[in-house]
Image 1 (spheres, helix red, strand yellow):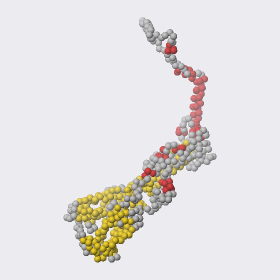
Image 2 (cartoon, one colour; image 1 turned 180 degrees about the horizontal axis):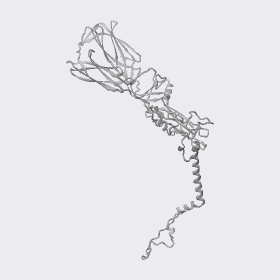
Image 3 (cartoon, one colour; image 1 turned 180 degrees about the vertical axis):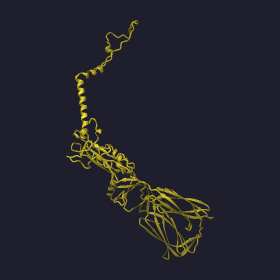
Image 4 (cartoon, rainbow, N blue to C red; image 1 turned 90 degrees about the vertical axis):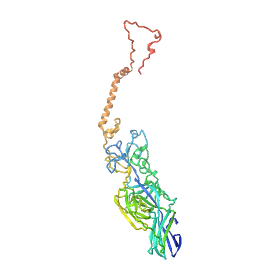
Length: 543
């Protein structure tokens, strides 16, 4: 059975069946109606973290030497996490005009300011602000195909049996009111050409409902540790650590954010990243995306005529043990141990059901010899991501689907905590007054008190602008004393005497002699009469 995007309906007329190798004609033909729904591609996901939709830069204009980042009350304030701890680099950074630029001796571009002069603010504080809108980012894993095919059996225009075949129920047995037994099984080949989103990141708005779309992006668009500029997830550290930031344009390091990509993709005739509305169903561990593709299905029907009786040995068995992962945080397993307690080999089936837990392959068929023990694993997943206790019911049935045994196992579910990563935190309000708009030509923000100890000792501008008059007076007195002492030393000749004393050569050493020992002259070492000692050993000269 093959079909395309739309639902399909087919009809097959069965006029004979084969029993024990003999074809038998039915007195009344049986009609099989097949109805197939659209295929559904299922992607499981791993939650990464929440990403801010659009971080922005706020500029606060301040007077000369009024911008601070390392005090108790920085110009941008701080951002604290849920535990009250200050996030590193959240106080932003300052761009300051130099004294030469203020006096008009130099002219360079400054980030976020028209220029450096007496009429404008000399300092700017650059603060990173997070948008109130957030997206949950999850890594998309490998896909699987979900399908649903309904089988209806009719005889003489009367419905005998109905069955629905899915990925979780590939084989179904039902009995007609007249005693006709029907078994249906299906084999589906997954299309090789359907669009796969494996390895990308799905972004879902945390606000529900939200006017923002759901989109998927390559993982290279993201920075999970927040240390890279111009990527989704940029943090305070990347904003603070950008090179030559004071000479770049406003908003550098904050490009290619989620809202930027949404605006660019919405302008395309066919969006590349935005998912069509209604094309998926959100779950805690997976989302469903309807894909219109071709699929091949092999359907097998086994119909027992009312005149033919097929004896099937019914087994006797018990559930020996059930063990499940508890507490369950995201993915776990339930191991079911079954034993054939009868004296003949028989077929059994094990079904697992849970209300608040997603079970992979709920129904398993097996064949056991007498006294044979078999352990069957069932994968379970956290469905609603809530802290609760769920009962997992395991049922053992014979080949005729009669219940032989059932056991309920309580599983404690522990939710997975998802945070905002390096973009999280609560901003604080600084006590230092500031302005978020460009300053007026004839005005400036109100002055504020800043510590005098942070001024360089050689900067009178800093002392005057911060009203540190005592430090300014002490600096003036120190400079006056140094100049007066230098003039006094030069006038009285002390400076010249000191220089001559330092540069005066040491006197030559005289060899020691005794009265009883005459001085001997070595003719070989005796100097020529024309060569003076001062020429042979020249002394250093003072400059």
